[in-house]
Image (cartoon, rainbow, N blue to C red; front, side):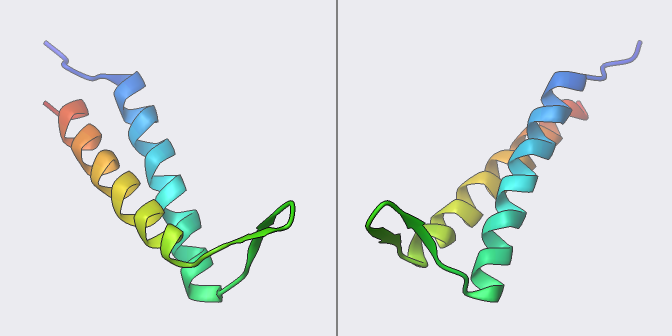
Length: 64
């Protein structure tokens, strides 16, 4: 029996894409400005680690 979970895999790929965007921001040092506020770089460290962990966990869940 095939235990494939396509929606879990899609969610894992979305979280991976989010982590990669934050990694790109950290590598290129571009600024994100919302209104009159500049978002600090440390936010991207959180945005890299949290989605990467979620993507890894969802990927493992999808493969069970």
